[in-house]
Image (cartoon, rainbow, N blue to C red):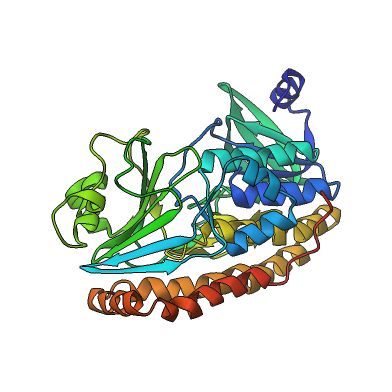
Length: 400
């Protein structure tokens, strides 16, 4: 998506943009896409090369799908083979509950990220993968972004920088940590297994296993691979390693380690990958001409599978504040984004935060799952509350 002329200009420090978005996940791409369609000069960069795999549950719920529909991308999503997930099986101890999961799809992150980045390029934004950002420095008329690409150091200039780099985020020179990490926060683990492992989970079903030291979600994506994503206590990970920790949680659902209660034999396709501590919030959602969005702005253990929905909602909602900052002084736009983020994204995360606390009480979880197994309709309030989040007012989107 990058021409040789573009590479040459970046290496000589000649390229200027209204906005540089760092991180081409759902949050960064949604921001870049919305800005590009509004006529803003955007450059979206990411340190990885496509295709890339990330720790992610691979599920898009009703809120995420509504936003993708507003962005005009549902046809592309269906064309990419996204798989409907009408059923979730919830497991805790010996208890099981099969629940309806209307309006959800599964898709691999490498395919979703490529789809979103392609939409940004089609809308006129510049998109570059394999570009590592090594520093961001305020200058008189904006921000200087130092990059490394193909082993060569270069510079970009932007009026505004959007930090969509994920957990941890970018740091300005001399800046203390911008985040508060929750005490006892679990870490994320993920892997994908070959399509031969069909005994684990049939296509169209999400399996959630809750244990004392964490939980595991398993789903099949459009490519037939088995996506395994978990949130685990750090003590369990230190004792058993990633594969052992996930196997221990699966085995806690009772019975021998066989069938759906164990991981497939053999190593995962790309090895196990992990994340930093999951539950955290940004102390400064915006600072000067740097605006944070997605996981860089804050995150909560995503048991309800809404992580990508939060990211997309934040990216779309951020766009008008970035446009305001491009047009003039950024202070008012930064204050506006801080308030909007709390209203739009943190509101969505509040229920998930409460649920994450409840999941640390095994006896209560087993009792709830047992009740849901007898009367699945009891899960409807949670499903309805999650669906209502998709109707949080968002900025009017530019037509695709």
